[in-house]
Each structure stands twice: as C-alpha cells, then as structure tokens.
Length: 186
Image (cartoon, rainbow, N blue to C red; front, side, top):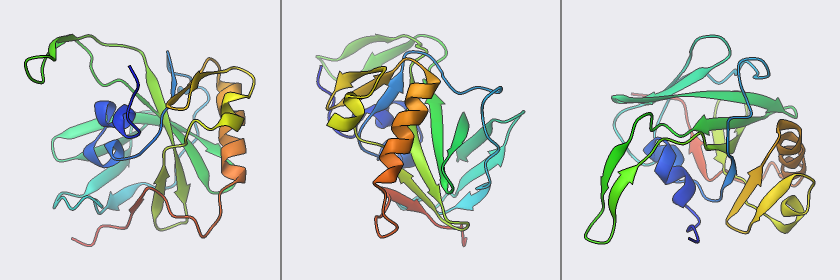
C-alpha cells in the first residue's frame, strides 16, 4: 500500500498533527524515559486548523509530555537536536483492538502496534513550527534507514538522530513549518 503524503500522522495523532506530511517511523519506540529531553514549549496554543479548543502541551510523568485538545490527549517523548529543534516521537494510540468501518470495502479490526512515528519541532521561544520530515534520497541512503519515498523506517536511535541532524542542516530560518502553533489568546 502506497501511503499518501499526509496519511501517516492522520492515523495516529491529534487532528492538528495529523495534517503534517511525510513519514519517519520505527517498528518500536526509540525514545523513552532514559534518553528523552525536557521540553521548553509547555503551554496553550491556538489550533491552526481553526478549532475553538486550544492545544495544551503539559509536563507528564518523568520526561514525557502530553498534548491535549478537548477530550483527547497523547503522551510523547522528545530529544533535543541542535539548538532550537526537537525530534518528537508518538506511539500508536490504539491500545486494544478496535472495529474499523470506513465503507463497504474497508471493514475489519485495527490491532494495536508498537509503531512509532516522528516529527520535528522548531521552537523560537514563543511559537512552535511543526515539520514532518520527508523521506528524501539523502536520508534513505544513510546507514540504518530502510523504506521508500513515502516512509523511512529507522531501527535505532543513533541512526534516527543522525537523519534528524542531516535534515535540520537544510533548514532555513525563512522556511515555514507545515503548521505553526501560536500562543493561545482565547
């Protein structure tokens, strides 16, 4: 199955984060309590998709942080990459089998997985720019990376961090994130 550019995150995260493009993933979580960084971007943010409910990013147990909106919340870990960037991991939120009914051709049961996906945050001290890194040829050519143009699959944290560092090298301060979270003014 060839995933469309925005499919990976739509399956797994809050509607805001689901709107990002591209897909970096691993078959099991690579960031955990032992190697995660403390994040500085806790607070309330406006939803760029226009929801009246703020996105709330708050500290959770240990190094984890929570992203919540309305009655949905997810726990995440992040690792600082460079000066203003964080590599954020989210794990499949499905914890028990759930029925799927998306029309006559798409029915069945969605089973839990340990698949983790990754995105980058650029934090400027006020706003959060969200980027889902693309699976570019230079990333695919790196040690420990498998996949194709729709998804890069990482088997180890050092390879993932190396790819994130390479991706960030191309970042320009004039570039815009896929979505920008501005402080909540509600």
